[in-house]
Amino acid sequence: MRQAFAGHGASRGLALGRARVRLPHVLEMAEQHVPAAKVAAEAQRLHEALEAARSEMRALRVKLQGALSREAVEFIDLHALLLDDPELVSALDGLVRNEHYSAAYALRLQRDRLAAVFDSMDDPYLKSRLDDLDHVIGRINAHLHRSEPVPRGTAGEVLVCDNVAPSEVAQLLTQGVVAIVSSAGSPLSHSAILARSLHLPLVVGASDALSRINDGDVVMVDGEAGTVVVEPDAEDLRRYHQREQQEARERRDLERLRSKPTRTLDGVDIALYANAESREDVGRAHALGAAGVGLFRTEFLFLQRNELPDEDEQFQVYRDAVLGMSGRPVTFRTLDLGADKVDRTGLSLENEDNPALGVRGVRLSLLYDRVFDTQLRAIARAAAYGPVRVLVPMVSCREEVMLVRRRLARAVAAVRRQGIAVEAPPLGAMIEVPAAAIGVYGLLDAVDFMSIGTNDLIQYLLAVDRNNDALGDLYSPLHPGVLRLLAHVIRAGEESHTPVAVCGEIAGDPRMAPLLLALGLREFSLHPANLLELRRAIRDCRLEHLRAQAGKLLQARDRNGIERWLAAAMTGARTNE
Ligand code: PEP
Ligand code: MG
Image 1 (cartoon, rainbow, N blue to C red):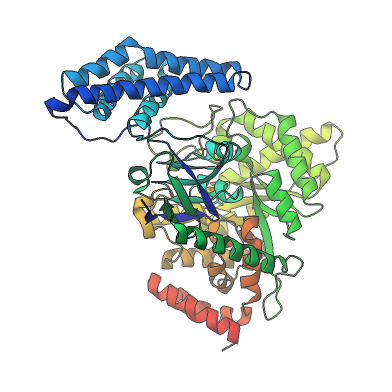
Image 2: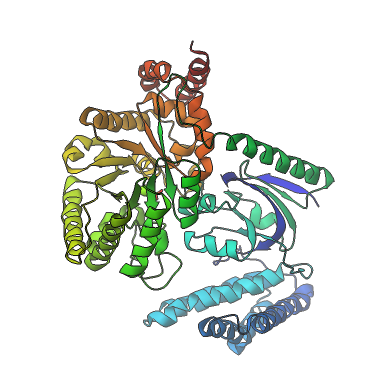
């Protein structure tokens, strides 16, 4: 039956596909009993789910034989073994037959018992087998909730899950997933950033998704509006195709701006740089006429793999990005692992109580000397092929920049000793820690440029986790404190002739353009997917008018006041009121 509900649009695009429901690892399930008369039927349901999970594993093994590495086959075998484990099976059976628990609740109880045993083991290998247990329990649980067999074809799937990790987004795309709907998460998460970069529609915070979508349902996803329609009817499908055509028309209109300058109505040129996570992003940035790459997130090279990329591998990726921009600068941000960007190479620390305030960004690089030096050498080598800049994430004080400057100079010297003629690249700081923003005047002589990372700056300034959907609207750039801090950093840059860009997600939001221009911003760094739309918005702005309104903007006392300013400024900017 048709159902519709909403979350938050996190990566735009339309998709129509069959749901693949991935239940959360830890089953959130209240205690559930079944009446004595139904116990036998419940036990049978449990055994059928077990058998279905077993045959699914067997089928998977046959299907993927030869296509998978030995390790992957071993994992499948291990999962099959767990499914046959008499202790697991008889314990589950006992919980249903003797204690009259529902099969689903029995699964949860047994999972938690076994998890406690795994957890108490000292051996890290055995400890990590908890993931396998969860995987197997998840499969059984999925079969318990599946009313009829799910047809599996080659058509695209919509992954429905509680959350998605940045490290799995690209893999899901290659597996043919056409959209993701998650019950938690936020549009500011790194997974969302990655999904946007890969043009994979994503709706987050759809709290009803797991309870209302069944495996195999047809799902229609609008990653911009954040809406999800389950089992769409004929009218939905008609509208879907209409929207597809409309989007294609809009894309064609925007395409006309490819070769146009990013110039305000009163003739001031604004620099649009691109944020890039991949070679494809660099290609798009070049094709759309970006002024350069303002933020190359190098950490994405370290995710989705178990071993560290060595100097040569990194060098090749960086060199290709430099070549891809043919003479326009590429800004490599040094490794920004930690917090929600947890790698599998073992660099980011596990079990930090508060990872967002922990060893992340430059702190992590300074902890691992060799890894950091390797990266700096690889970047310095790439500088032989075109203009390169180095950007340091999570700077909180001047000392960190000075330390990195010395390390960069050493890396450049080492590269020169190899006979490669390179200059030390300009060094910049991400301004994303409030103390660095407030104390920006102390950083000015230590940096060659600055890039304001509003994604983190807003989270740290407002004490609102960028990934916590429960905090909803509290995460907002439209806060007087945020605007004042932005104005302060931009002014410091202006006064000292230090280039300042904004590279957080707000830079790519056309609605925010008048506000950022009013505050004095002249450089934006944003995902290439939004570049033409932002260009269009800027070409509609009259800079002089906006600058004259900046005082009023900074006097706004709350979000409503800022929104009123934005509405008025846009009308005025266009009509030159
Ligand atoms: C930011 O914090 O605004 C930023 C651009 O960096 P990231 O989103 O990668 O943390
Ligand atoms: Mg950041």
